Image (cartoon, rainbow, N blue to C red; front, side, top):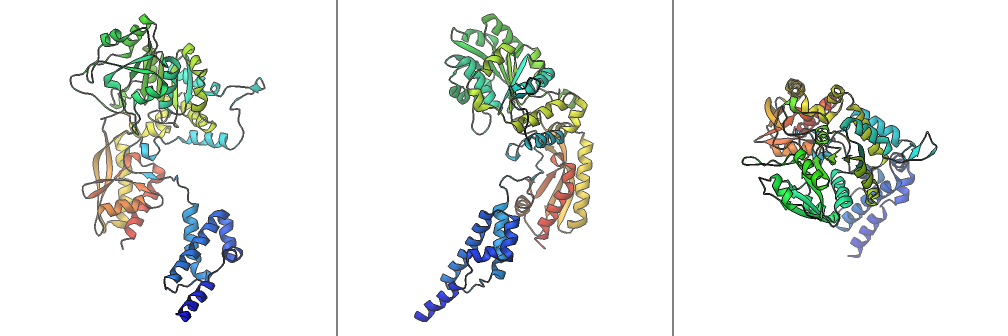
Length: 471
């Protein structure tokens, strides 16, 4: 027993010390390529792993040459960012789980320019004194939407929250029952109202609400008439809703502001692309809504933000709300949002340069050609390991936008042999970069609508590598 104990002690004594690992050639290389805390953590964990193996009666090689590979693997693991880029092959354009809208090249360039140095975020260069951050972006928003004034917060839920808090804290807000939406993550309009201190006054029924329902609900404690666009669901069949222009007439009669929460918010009419029922921000402003709120990272195709546009006197009241400081956006969001809005000054360029808008409106033939390129590259390498076909399918806008609107698309169907389709999906999802596709029956579908042209070679390389693990 004593001899065995001494043998274990001798083995433990051969374990390298942390400082010994760091001072040698391996350690110097690791420290040059990564952060010291990460390197120390990786070294300690591998040494501890070997210590436990020895105590369990094993005899691992504990020389630095032997354990260097394990240490390097851990360094790579701990050095990797948790928020990682990936390839969206799902066909869902505004995919909430995958970061929603892709920024345009011009927006990315502007963010890099502003984030990499100082800026005039709250400084008036012409006057040499402190300025207001919202002044940089409101003029372009006013020009594009036709609104009298504008302000921006960190998302559309925040936009609705600050509007309710400003105009209806302790007062009633009249909303149709058919518009009490849940806007994702179990975050619901009634809960937003409760948080703002407003009192919800439901009118009408789920499928039908008449103007008289609003009119009969108006009282001395009414703060707002509110309309919520059905941006993430549809009520069909025996239905009726009150258009915003009729609510505006009612609001003027009782001197009550009308707020229209568009949710998605588009600046380009999608009717000519066969997409119906989605009003533009400009249209709602022309119809007389006092305040309109919408998202920056949905149909607009910009960064996450909540845009509030409307009557100047009302926007000015919102600007005085102390809550606004907690909801304001930073310089990087401003940079991305301003660059995105500027691209809308030329609609044709916006359709080509803003990825979200381009993906939603691109001709079907363009998608088919992209699918054909992916198919051809895969066929060269894995045709013997999978049945490959170009198939017609349907994409979705996603992100709570354009519900029930199907977008014809083309996808590459990959039906693997020698590995299950679930196994292939997992390998792609765990690859570098991860590829997120969808399973349909016994095949994996790679939807060409959401594949960027620059990603095609990377994507096909990931698919080939996933099959390579099966050889």
